[in-house]
Image (cartoon, rainbow, N blue to C red; front, top):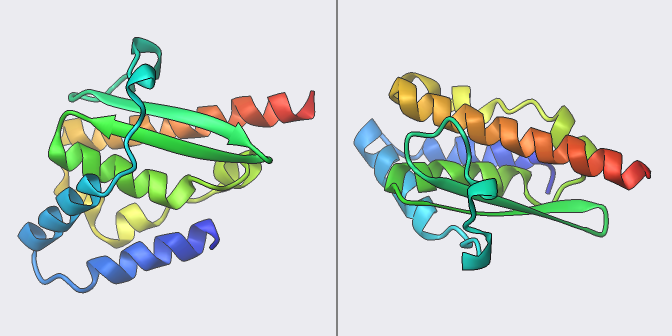
Length: 141
């Protein structure tokens, strides 16, 4: 499934909910289903800078594709990182670095997050793009 197909799936899923309380509950549920990062990767190097809560993100590069695992100490944040991981994990560094992530605006997330959560979400995205760039240059060597 492509990055855009995954984004479209999230947009469709969020369209099933009437109000933002239901959408927040769904985000929390997504966080509960997040494949967790192994404890050995919960290190200061894997902490996302710019997040109010603690968010760990680990990337692995296998067969030309990046796979991400993550965790957070906050329920909503865990759900947010879960969506990002769901959309971007399993793709090449080039696909990830060139991806335009439109699902955030289409589901109305940007306008319903506090400024600190919004900053944290964009810090997660920035870190994933940095991993993609780093592994992309590694693959060229």
